[in-house]
Structure formats: structure tokens, C-alpha cells
Image (spheres, rainbow, N blue to C red):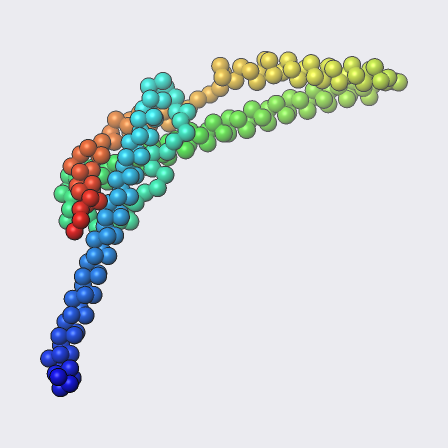
Length: 216
């Protein structure tokens, strides 16, 4: 028995068994990793399609005031090599197109939000400039008046408040009527929405779900 344990045959058997175990562990980890990635893709696609529905509703009313992004996270680009032998060319092109169009929609939404933010900042700057001009004019009037009484100071304060309120009524409250809303972003999003494929119920979605639910 001792001789057998030290024999080349036994060492070969041990090596073969260890190698087999290592291969089993390797392929199990690879399979589990593929299942995890497939699950991430399924969740991303489902969340994206829910966001797309909200964006479509907004575009039907000709605006982009939505608080969603189509693809906050993206697992396809760095993991697509795992699915080369699973998806055919049409399916590969379909999921790639989905992720590309999702990215373009998100870029357009980002630019729209930046444009809105810039408008708000400009409106705020305009108000501060106008109020500064009003204050400067009142101060100039005060400097040209001798013996300004407490009543006069209150009068000037009331005048400042009155002019500020008038500015709000004439300018600030009319921004919704006169604000410039870029049409390009809305037009682009509408176009991308028309071109983006539906994946969750397609053969792509079914194959990914099959991987997620597989036991082996």
C-alpha cells in the first residue's frame, strides 16, 4: 500500500483528480459569472424600458421634463464577449443598438437639463442686475437729498420693495410664456425612441432570462 501511494501511477491519479476539480471550479465560476452578468443585463433592459415609457409620455406632450435616465448603469460594453456564442448576429446587433440608442437619449436629456439650468441661472443673474440698478438709482436720489429723515428712509425702502415686486410681476412670472425651450433635444429624443428596439420580450430577452434561470 505504501509503495502504491508513492508510485507514479498514484501521483498521476492525484494530479488528474486535482486538475478535474480545478476545471469544475473554473467552469462553475465562469457559469455563475455569466448568470450574474445576464441578470444585470435583464434588469438594466427592464428598467430602461420603464424609463422609456415615461419619456415617451413626456414627448407626446412635447416636453422632456422627466426625472429618469434610460441607462444609469451599463453592463453590455465590457461583458458582451461572454455572449458571442449565445446570440446570433441579428440579436447581437439588436442589443447593441438598444444600448447605443439608450445612451443617445440620455445624452439629449442631459443637454436639455443643462440648457434649462443655464436659463435659470441667467434669469437669476438678470434679476440681481435689475435689483442692483434699482438700488443704485435710489441711493443716487438719496445722495442728492439733504436731511434724509427716518420717514424718508422708510419711503425709499418701500419704493425698493415696490419696484422689486413690479419686476417680479412683469418679468419673473412671465418666464413660462417667454422662456426659450430648445427643440433639437426633443426632436432627437423622439427620433431615438422610434428607433430603439424592444428587448425584454424579444429573443434576446428570452435567451438572457434562460441563462439567469438555468441550473447548470
